[in-house]
Amino acid sequence: MCAYFIHPVWSDSMDRKVFACKNLKLDDEVVWQLDKLHRLEVLDLSFNMITLDIPVRLPFSKNLYTIILKNNQISDKGAVKLAEAIGLCKNLQELDLGINYIEDEGASNLADALGTCRFLTSLDMSHNQIGEAGFDALVEHLSRTEIPLSVAFHGNEHGDDVDENLLKVRS
Image (cartoon, rainbow, N blue to C red; front, side):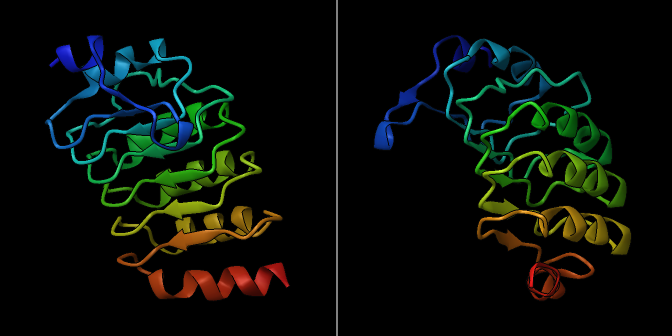
């Protein structure tokens, strides 16, 4: 498993440094070591078994623009830890946390952190287990953004309401 980390395959698509390890059943051990990739711009660890039960040491820097953690096992516990790290990533533009068992507590913590990401243009929180409290926290914080924001929230309790509510709060 660590071979993928020690010798990562970098892609320079559109002049971005990309590290992608999809569908390899990676776990938190690999995530623990990713802080060594300081110049990373796109991190795609979708379709693995990442829980973030260990302290998050992702390569959060001014260069990280896209984080894709779709279809892992992050849940509320991991979302709380991820929120602490995301707060350090001021230039984040895209975050995909779809299908991760995140509930209200995790969504609320993520909402606080995402409020510091001034350049966020895309957020995917689809197919989690977010109810009214998490939804309200996300709407409150995301409605403060000054640039257009694409939000995927379908598959949650208020999934169809998110775009309409964000537009109401912004106007």
